[in-house]
Image 1 (tube, one colour):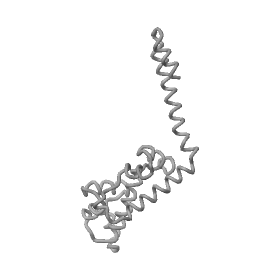
Image 2: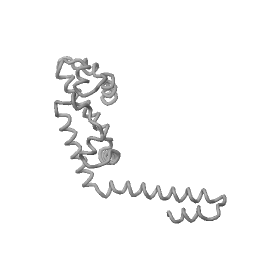
Image 3: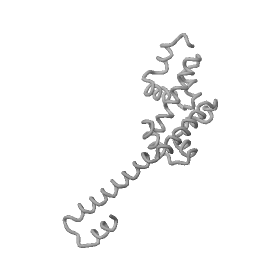
Image 4: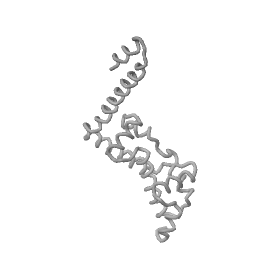
Length: 162
């Protein structure tokens, strides 16, 4: 395919040259997409192993009581631990779980936040800092997006648990 492109632009250029070159490049990109997608279907066991290792790393990270110091984990952190690129890890998780790496991180954050919200009387700000957020508003925004309710409203729904 590359040879055809090279041959096309090295010959006399006419009104069809650009279209033919673009068609060859498009075909090359389509084959690349196909190759990339196939690896997820031909490596099911590997993908499941990576997914399980990721979940384990995620649980370990959030079970540690030092989130204030460590902060919210980045996709890069987990990718490096799994010896993968950040994009590949997100693609792999998305294929096997339907969620990207950042979505998994946010859902785990919200689960931990719910436990703290319903188990303590700490303020929303205290909880957000405890979870590694620099700004409580960012915590509230993620919480509301993932839980469908603000942290304060969740707490008000279950007052007896505080």
